[in-house]
Length: 152
Picture 1 (cartoon, rainbow, N blue to C red):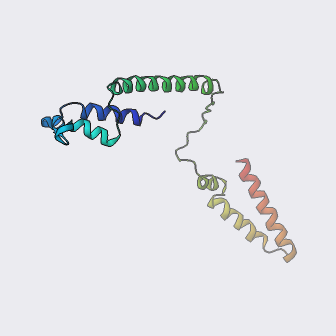
Picture 2 (tube, one colour):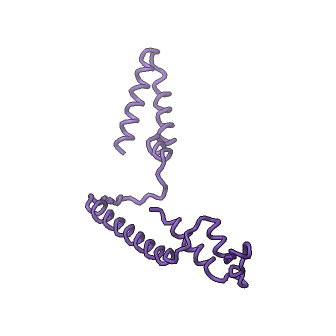
Picture 3 (cartoon, rainbow, N blue to C red):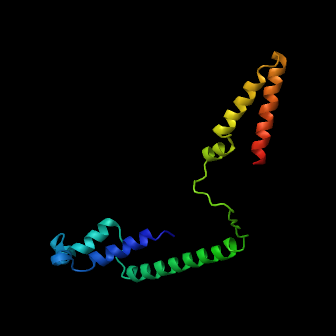
């Protein structure tokens, strides 16, 4: 199934069945009684089949494999991906100039310095009350401030 072996056989045959650079693969090697071309000896030593149909077979196999793969990919995209519900993008009314991150969300929830200073002033004004009522007054003041923040 993998095309690598087909491509390697076709490339090896294309290289070694020709005369090669400077006619090197046409030289005869071996004992005088059974001389063989150098190109054929190299293919035989590498275990490459020397039948002539491998180059044409590799082209046919690769074209068929590419056609099959692209057809399956196209059908997969058409029947699986395109029938699903498409996402809906809603635009915000106010443009955001900052990229969202957990830190920016935390900063958005935090009260501003002015609000915190106002809460401190309210707490300081209430400090003249008795010790029991001071804690209650501070909690009430902080609660009112947080309610005002959530309204704005």
